[in-house]
Image 1 (cartoon, rainbow, N blue to C red):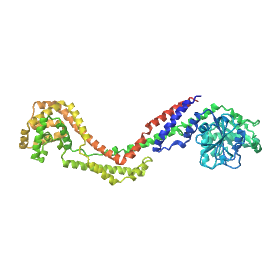
Image 2: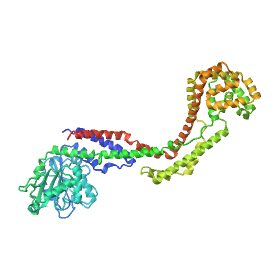
Image 3: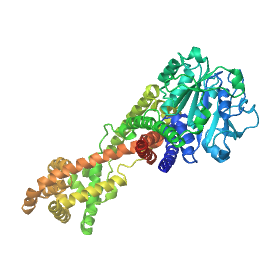
Image 4: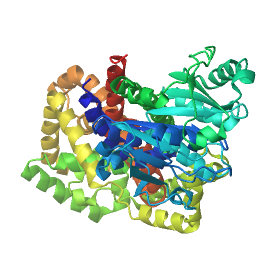
Length: 624
């Protein structure tokens, strides 16, 4: 069967995993390099799919059950030292047929081990933390069959458990050597239970049996062992307790059937059976079992991806709670009307004809000479038309200082709320937020941060260039939408420029009653209020009123909406400034990390893993 499709997809899978593992560690999902499924991926599937067909058979079992005896019997030579002492073998020994002695080939077959060529019986007895595997050529081992003698799986040394796990990953067939004492051992059953989950082919061999006395019992031992592990053995053998035959490598092995019920009358040749195993079918089975374990939805890649999604969701929720701009969304003072109106006037002044602008500028200077208090008492629209110098816009110190103080108080309140929330999370936050907030607070001086914040706030202009451009854009739009009202407004502005001397005298000698009424109108109607109130102040009627009667009501409504829009945008811009400041000086690194973690399921590597998982599951199903 052509497994090249598997190779291509598994190589891409490993590359995508290498890319996403650091992101997974960021959100708190440990790297899966020590997980069984990951070990099968890079120690079993990829190496063995890219080599010529070989079958690795491992002799596995507990202490003092005669594994080395069986190993020598199958090898046809005394390849492993036999000892009555438990757990003497620390490292696996591999007998390699002459056609498989290429070190590069062996390196691919035994990923996870450091290979060394065998020198003496003492080699596998070395005490070392390294995972060694000793190999030597053997002319008696059948072609394409590699035979492994292994450390005890029930050793009291944890390092042996890890070596046994690595052996299970690289082996294609396991020979489970059991005895009356070990068939129900917890450590032995755990090892073979995991082998069954990977659909690893297993041959069961009960050793050191009394053939007549134990015949009624080994079927029960077999049943218990298979029920406890989930195994369905390829074959079942029994071997008698016969030290002399073992020493001569003439120990008879009897095939007793898959249920253990057959009578052990004629010895079988297990070594010959291994040589005639259907290599391709068994290899495909063991590779398929390994791939199934890699893709497992709970304990494999599927479980890993699920863990990433769950952690990323925690990061998303946490970031959402901690968003600086949301923390800054609190009731905010509005810009004083006179500052906003001056900005509107500046926009209007740029649209006046030069001679009109000059006249208004002249009378602006006259008004300043008469006195600011008097001019401040004029109506807003009259004062707006009088004033023609945009550089004078917004000069109302008391209003601005009052507004700035209100913003100051709002900012102090928001920062207090932010710190209060941070301290709460530092004490009782979730597993994502708590350690990160504790680190954040550990490096921050609240009073110094507040002082810097207020200093930067104090330097903010009443209206920045961005908001001024926004005002201009919206007023330009309003102008296009109400051409008749704007045309009238321009006519009135020109008339007012021509009538300045008369209006000035009228204002001085008739009082400010009319002007006071106009102020309230201007505050509600915006730019169109200039036209309305100018008409009232100059006494213009007739054609002007006719125009306003048809267009003024709609214009006044949209002007009111426009003023509300400008105020809303202004508040949003100030809130955004605070949000940006908090992000830059306090919450930025934490929020950046949380947002990065939240985006993990949308990263190319994650999407690639999901795609490859689906494709491999389909490929796996096609081999059933």
